[in-house]
Image (cartoon, rainbow, N blue to C red):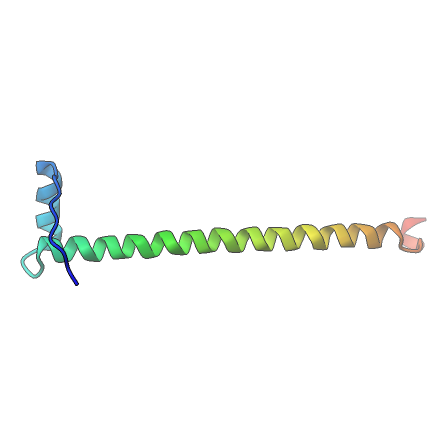
Length: 80
């Protein structure tokens, strides 16, 4: 369901909006498409940041485990 709303834009932004929307699209249609794309990108950025946090946490755990393994490793020819 669509709802009517009102926004105030500066003249230069309105001119750009008309230029980008062109004759094939309404201002509302163009703004809606741009906002939907923006919201998808924001959601994807949040998801990617969460993934990076998980990856970094896993890497920290694995690095700690590896340091522990190396600490208790039997000395070999390369450590003598």
